[in-house]
Image (cartoon, rainbow, N blue to C red; front, side, top):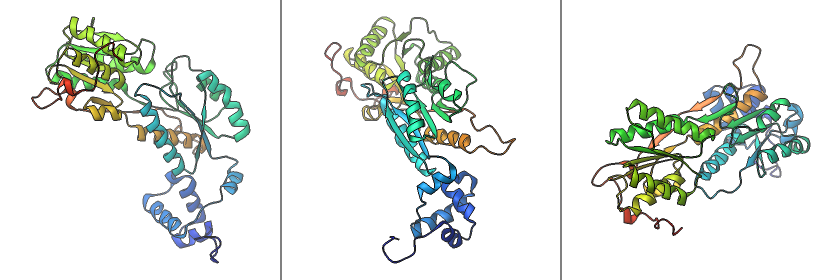
Length: 363
């Protein structure tokens, strides 16, 4: 319905009349759909679509005293494949925010300190309502700054310095690597190495803990079977080569797909067959992992984004006194996606020659 076609523009009241609900119910469908039952939600949305109703954003902002804006920093471009997870998260977060009647404001900063420096301008100049954080780490200054100013915040990642922290959504990395080890033990592996990041990375330490726990439960040794290294394919290939040649390792569980791809390069260099001779498991289930048949742990990124928006909504529109806390943390289970790189079978894995990895030192 176009304003120039001679037909009266649809209003909140006309939508309510057509859908046979109150104006408040239509407002809830637009601004707080979690308060509306499924059947009513579908009926009102169908009427909105049919008549082409579009609420006046400026009027909404004046009534609510909110900008309906959520700010998030875009991480610097990464060479590692893990950046694809944040790309997926950003897309899913944008969709979830739009479904809640909100919009994202994206900005850049070189590090967490610079990000904090940008917050004042975002609040003062754009009246940003809330913030989403990613890339949480030990000593993270961002959450404390936002809490002191009572600004709604949700983080994709745990506040590693505060085990009792709230308003975060994370993926259970330990559960993912535990599932990977259990899968490899079921394949008959007993020398399962860990390729992870240097100690002190909250996410990396969490993923390593799952490997340690599963190895202990299976009665398998861990001493001398782990390495902490940067998320670099060439370094991972050299490190994996040493573990395979000197430690009798037959399987490697990795903290990322980048490290796992380096491990596959080492398997190729030794002339062994991925899956049949040496199993490799990554983490993040990147598109590259799918293309190369790499077993990997997939994160529920879409669910994480939706949970972040739900946390913010609970803080922006808290329920009546006595309602459940709106900032309860959310820990989501990952999923092990099994492919050829970890399956022992005559037809389970491609030959080493088919994997596109040059010998070590030629990167």
